[in-house]
Amino acid sequence: MEHVQERIRKHYPELTNQQKLAAKYILAEPQIVAQKPAKLVGALSGTSETTVIRLSYALGYSGYSELQNEIRSSLLERVQKEDAISSLRAAAENLRGQDDLLSFNLEQDVAYIRQTLGGLQKEQLQHAITRIMSAKHILVVGFRSSYAPAHWLAFALNVVKGNAHLYNGPVDDANYLLTQINADWLVIALSFPRYVNETILFTKAAKERGAVVLGITDDELSPVGPIADQVLKVYAPAPTALKGMTAIFSMLNILVSGVVQADGEQVQERLRHYENTSRQIYPFVGETDM
Image (cartoon, rainbow, N blue to C red; front, side, top):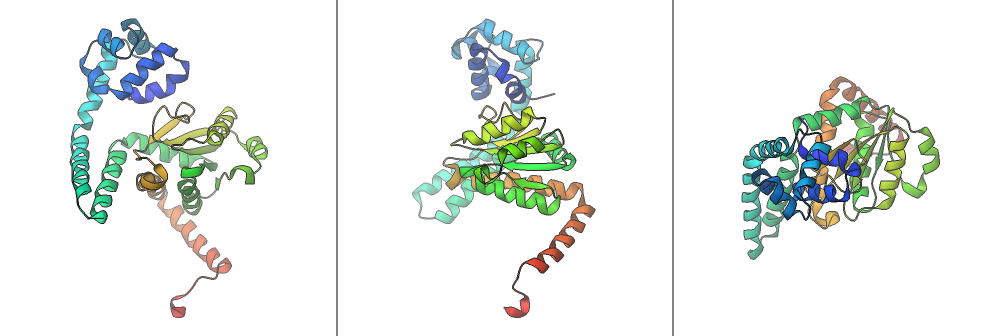
């Protein structure tokens, strides 16, 4: 069964304005929705009981009760993980009053990595890896704070799989790229605050030409969320460029490791070929030169 967050993401563009308000409230306050009737959820979200019930139907549920039960099940699965995160956050908070920058940042980074990877379902990860493995061409898009992880992901996927390219905005010919894109292409769009409009516009254009879109972002309803065929959510603290990179790179590392595991023999062959080619092109410092 799809989680309610995924259903909201997929159906969000089709919802009415009132249903969108209710959907945002459900994402923000799942604990309240799990316990309260539709009438109260409607009031708290600034909508109505009718809107909440119609939203349930629009998301593919038989009614509000089924939506509520699905949220309860999701919350039960997350209890143990959230307790671990809470304890780590508390430990990090206690360090604020201490002169121990190393321990403070370590605890904080670990907390966000646990929250990010703890919220990642095995099925989600496997689905994303399958999309990467089956794509004939991979195009990675990301600007501003997303550019560094996008650059690394394109590099890493090109090493272990091949046919991966980083979209460089004005440096590349976007019109030409879009004429090449079809259903064989996978576009991996990294989008974190502040969201860059060029990422959204290019990703949307690629989707219209048949490309499969894998979004890596901080929220299911971020600008790239409703466009993507699949979203991998990263809990990245603001400002992302300064504090969120550890969690983002942990997610990307999981993806690349998954590709290596899924196609070990081919990856090993590619790595050998890559190393031999690299030695012919780049003047690496050898052990005897050190």
